[in-house]
Length: 383
Image (cartoon, rainbow, N blue to C red; front, side):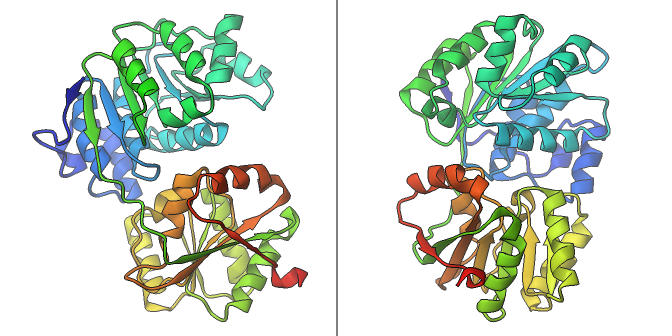
């Protein structure tokens, strides 16, 4: 495997890259001006048709790093599955598909998500109709379709393994190997992982073609000075619990994280209606809107910022006192990235997580991977 930590010419801006007008227009609409470090490294290599092994954390922008070349490589005039993205969880499948849908909004590209825990018939119907060019899915359900003969991968020429180490941790290694054996050997492959255990090295050796190894330093912050607490709350009481927590903290400067743009916008409207000085930050906003929102928040004109993961990437506001996870993050890395938005510049901060009945399993999985114990407290509405 070739080792390359810095390509000869990392992309300084998206305009430096051979990107189609349709994709570049979507990037402009998002307000993205410069690539993130992993995008700057990976995009030139992937757009050149080479295989990539990328070492990068969640929240580093790797979906666009592999998604933009994928969109450029798929021929939407042809029917059939031309690209496959394997991810460890259905939550990540939904998130990846949503971002790629946004990036391809000006093209006819059609993306299908395939994962367990949902009815099989809609997926079967979409596959039989040949409506999808790209499948984003989890290994178990992908393998299920392969065994049923309802999914063919013989035309796949672009394949992505996202968060590969998590897939192996979850026991998907045999499934991944079997899926890879159903794809053409001359496909282009992009593998992204936070770590590089021996099992992944074996996959790289057996299934990739002289990949470039790209690594960026983790921007996951040190969270030693963050006080971490969680609150059990009924799912139906989350908004009421959030309001009581904000009121009890006496005018905090707080970032409240939601998983989706729709959820962020809805919570913003609710809090604004209740009289809170609140702003919202998500990926559908223009750069001008984002700048105004951040200016209001950093100046104190608004005290609460409701944000999604993608829009909140890289926020560095020293005076944030609280981070509140209204929705449970997808994984421990996202949790750490979120709570690092407080306790900046040597200051302390509080990270609070609202854990509903439906969140218990996911939150337990996250806390098992943390180096500290998250303390349980009682919400004022239940006191």
